[in-house]
Each structure stands twice: as C-alpha cells, then as structure tokens.
Length: 466
View 1: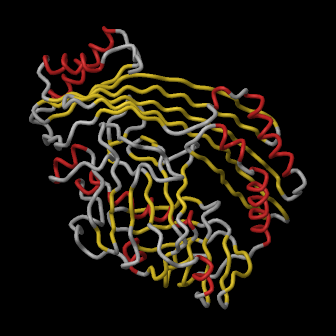
View 2: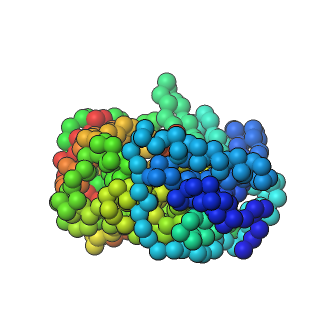
View 3: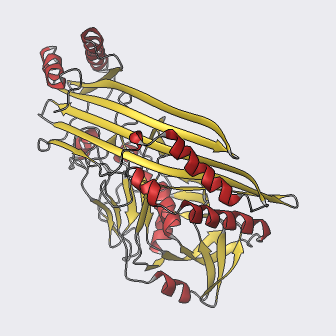
C-alpha cells in the first residue's frame, strides 16, 4: 500500500469505539491541469492540487458526514467526532437508513497510460494548441477560436467497517474548443472536443487538425444553412446524440434516490415494457471510451447493469443506502464529486447497446427524415418525473430518398423518453462511448465525470421544433 499519511483502518476502529455502527473513510488526491488559448493568446495555464479525507458514520441508521483537508490527528479526530454528532442529532428527526449487505472488496488498480502528462513540459502542450489555432486562421468566417487542454489525475481510497480497502487512480486527458462563425449578421457557435482515459500518448497521436477543421466546416456551414420547419419526422440519431438523450432523459430517472423521492417516471416500472425490443441500455464503469470507474465511492465494484434489456426495464442504479431501502444489490453507483461531498446515486457510462444495422443502411432505409448530429449539441430541459425532454442538436442534415442531403441548423428535439424509446425501429452496430475531462454531470450541487453513447438509432415520428 502507498502511504496516505494516516491509517484509515485505525480511524474506522476509533469511530466504532465512539459508538458508530458503521464507518467508511474516503481519501482523495486530485490534480487538474488546464491551459486556455484564447484566439492565439495563452489566457490561463494552471495546475491545481487538493487532498483530503471524509468520514461517513451510521448511528442507529442515521447518517453523518464530515471532512477535512488537514491530515493531522487533531483535525481527523475532529472530523470523525463531527460526523458522529451529526448522525446522533438526526435520531428521531429523519428516516433511518440501512446499508445493503455485500461482499468485502480489497483492491488497488489504475487506468492504463503510457506517458504521464505530468512529465510533459507545458510548452509542448501550448505548442499543440497554437498549431491547431494556426490551421484555423485561413477560415475567415471564424470570428473566435478558443482552445483548451485538460488533464486530471484522481486517486481515491475507500475503507469501511466491513473490511473494504479499495485504492484506484484514473488519468484523463483531452483537448477541446469553442468556434464562433459570423457572416452577414448571423452567428453560429460550436463547442466540441475529444477526451480519453489515457496519458499524453492519446494527445500526441490524435489528429487534432483534422478534428478542428471538421468542426470549422460544420460551424461555418451552419451559417449558410436554413432553419428546419417544425413537425413530426423520422429521425436518425448519431452516436453522440443517442448518448445525450439516454443520459439526460433516461439515466437520471433510473437513479434510485430520485425514485425514492417520487421524482421518476420509472417508479414501479421494474419488469414492464418501456421500450422497443431492439433497445437495451447499460450502465458500465469500464467500457472502452468512457470514464474509468472500477469502484464507486463506497468501495462497491461497478458492475455492468442492464437498465433496459430488450425493451424491458430491469431495475435502478443504486448506492448502499438505496439498495438497502429497495432490498436490492448495490450496483456501484454511489459517487461524490470530492472527498468533501456526500455520496449520491450517479450514472457512470450509460449507453444503448449495438444492434445489427449498418448505419449507412439505416439512412438508406429512411425515405424522408432528419439526420440529427450530436457534435455541437446544447443542453435543454428534462423532467425525470414525467420523462419529458427538449434538446437542441448540432448542425444536422436532411434525409431525402435514403440519402443525406443539405445541412440544416441545430434542431430542437422534444418528446417523452418512454414514447421515444418505444418508437425505435433500427439500431446500428457502431457502438461509440465518449467522456470529457472538461465537464460532467451535475446533481445536488456536485459534478462528476461520466460517459455516454450508443450506435446510430432511428426513431419514428419525433417532434422537431426547427
């Protein structure tokens, strides 16, 4: 074991000696590097580091949590005592919780990488962004090019009263950018990038110039594109658009803490048909292309969970508390943003499993419709209680006679997620899952890294708002 500067197991024993029924300790070391190139000028180049410890205590079913960034014994003792005081104060004032039973897990793992970005000089990273910027100068319609580089190293150690001791580290790296195009009083904006759970070798070997030239062509093309008339259309969703839809409109409704609060359209739906038989949706912490989460922040292994299997809803995403409430098995979805935050039920990598259609054949089989692209898509509104959603795609294309025709500007898509999933009639074989080092999913004031994706999918009769 790599030294943490304190012994989590001894502090668990101290918590139990103070009267706690169950204690878990969460330690985190976090490093984040960020470089911002604003129209060719370096506006920011920073490296931030933090570490700390959080104690969660169960006392007669009531939960207290406290944390500290000072690993000296007096500060650790104070945080543990504070967590226990909070738990005791809640007795009789809130609903008691039960920790679900599971096996004991002891492991030390790390995501794969070849070249640690920490060892790469900052000048090489800046030069990369400047080289991308230089390739975009020739596009006169671009009025602004803002590029960014990000690297994150996140180590977490979780120990518990049941005997768990899990130590895992993830490295993520990526490059992104926001392009703005203007002409004749019209303006279009496109935000996009690529990230991987990897090291500098990913950045070094990726063709960034090609990616950003494609982005420039899209955003400039959107300037000349027409708005699409509203109505109901058959739509083909690309991989990124499928991921956005599944994560936002379906994934949150599958989180068991939202179900417990009465805020999910999926309440009492276990075993029910909620989608086309072509639809299977999975949450998986180790899928290629997504964020790497072998364990959650309670030390539970992140198992591959079928939320929908061939159209049938199979169950919810759980942490230890919600699994105890529903008398279910933990799924490894207890996550927190940092050591200072309490655990919530969160998605990891949610995606729609591939089918057997070639994506080109899906388009060829669509006589008239719209090919909705996720690159440059923007968020909308989602109501997990009803399943209603609205999103805006990135620059997209008309489908006529089975062929992709002219570009249209981003289109607003609206509907109910369960109706939408029931109307899926073609699922591609081209699974693609992505994550981002620059953002993630927000809930309860916390942001965590996630991944999402799927293959190309066709949905009949979708409402588009133009």
